[in-house]
Length: 326
Image 1 (spheres, rainbow, N blue to C red):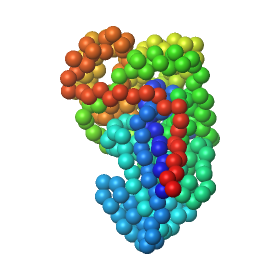
Image 2: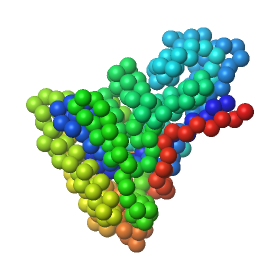
Image 3: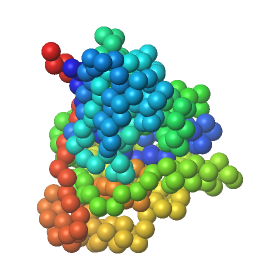
């Protein structure tokens, strides 16, 4: 049996600049980190040569083309597996609408497990590029490229998206003490709200294309990725709080549905209790709220937000990994 373990991610700044509507005219940039919350994909040979896929439902089919799950179908096709395989998945957190990049982690994990099942291990660059091809080109999802790359490479990365479609991945090089302080100062809070990201991202892309309405804000957001990288490499982790707030004020203007009165109330309450900055992760509208606050102020913030559930996490240094059970 082959098991892939692929991390979810937190995007700090620059989200939205990885959408083609922006980076094809301007260079995009983000700072993201993998975290120790994972999606596991289990792949095993199936004796009767059928294909069995277990997710929220179970499909048993005779051929790849019969599968309804488009990500599994396209990933199997990409690696040339056409029969005789059983696939199951497990996630550490809810799989949809969380803003942690779960769909792309799932796709990267599928590709990694399928390549390993064939005895042909894949490197991180191939996994990320092929996952983008599947999600964006073949399945037509209105998403960007950062999630696939951080899931494949892991660690904390400064990622650039060039107009010629190249993606450059550079580790953020800072001291372990700086990373430890970031971990102590970040709060990941589950809002209990789920949202469909495709509609928000589609509107955001349209707003960027039509009249370039979002371009000015996105240019500033890409610049913040450079600023954060430089601050962290100079061992000034407190800059993350300020940049999170500045980025959130820009992000919430990009499309309807990124925020709502309840999210605004939570955010302002947290700020009044000592949070320096924060954001709703992913496309917005629900999922996880990320806050940056000094450790001594966090209990006060949590008491003021009793409806939100804190989820402990740590940074994950590795991207998608393979484990084999004989």
